[in-house]
Image 1 (cartoon, helix red, strand yellow):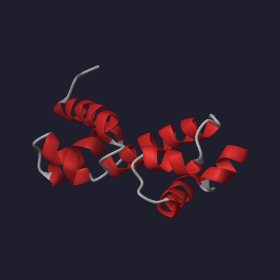
Image 2: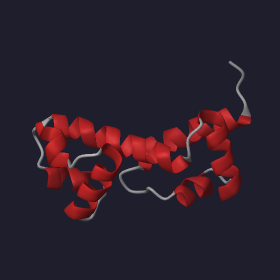
Image 3: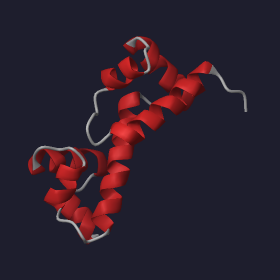
Image 4: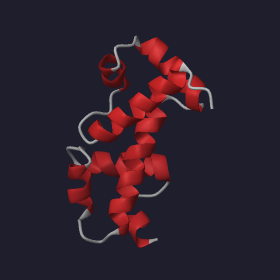
Length: 109
């Protein structure tokens, strides 16, 4: 597989997201961290993977949320806080928008 600059940017981006998604979900933050202009950053990610940077960030947050919801150790509120949401209703809305059900419904399904 040819390593294009876009793929390189994508790889670095995903690594950064994995380290920071509980604290930082703004696309501009990641563009800045990679020292790339926002438009160039968005274009590179889209070319490399066919998704926007925000979609990637959201996927990673939702994957973690789902994994934590499957384990019954933590309350939905604790999971929301651990993922960097400062309130439960925002987390509920974010999760429902992206998954089609609330965190509680997901946990019970």
